[in-house]
Image 1: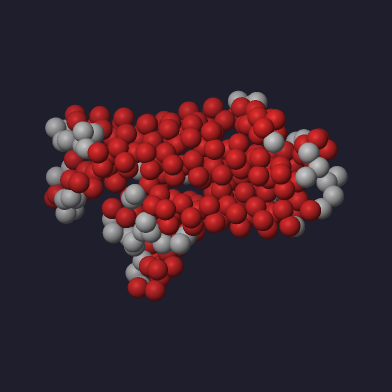
Image 2: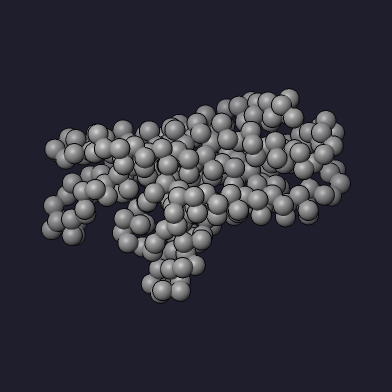
Length: 263
């Protein structure tokens, strides 16, 4: 099993795509977090009612976890869908006929790469956000233990998202379909659903179990929660829900698509 884990991890790093997307994510998250921090520094007359200063970390430093989780999820999707696209899945299954073991190995080997994405995205958000706050003579709260807890939880959330991506790739092995589904759901369908569902009491209870809400719960907050768009689960509730989605995708994928003969 160790050899299989090492082999699957090397597949993540064998192409340039992982670090290209990593750089794009870091730059994008830094710019976004800087913009959010700047909006906080604006006067109340320009930006609306002032936010509680204690919620600045939740609002700014979780930018990657709340808005950039599609990047690690995308790398995860390609772990399976990319192999089907480039016809390398057949040698993989020939080397390891137990396909369940392959699925598990891909999901476990995704953890180090997820940590790298979590660290890069969160660091970019914190560095840019804290710099903007400091330049505007506002306390970035980096001396507070709660802030570092939020930062660590953001890294954890992004790590789990890469595992979810791998599981989704096991279910949707067509690379184009998997990428389009991931981006449409995370960037359009779920944000709209969260905002809409939060307007009713029953909808708010449903919204907290959506994948993005679960990721925000792990991170300890997000842009959505800072705007009071619904409530979140406890951290470990978020971990359980997001890993539950990963398990569900992986089980269905293994029982359907991955049980067929690979041509």
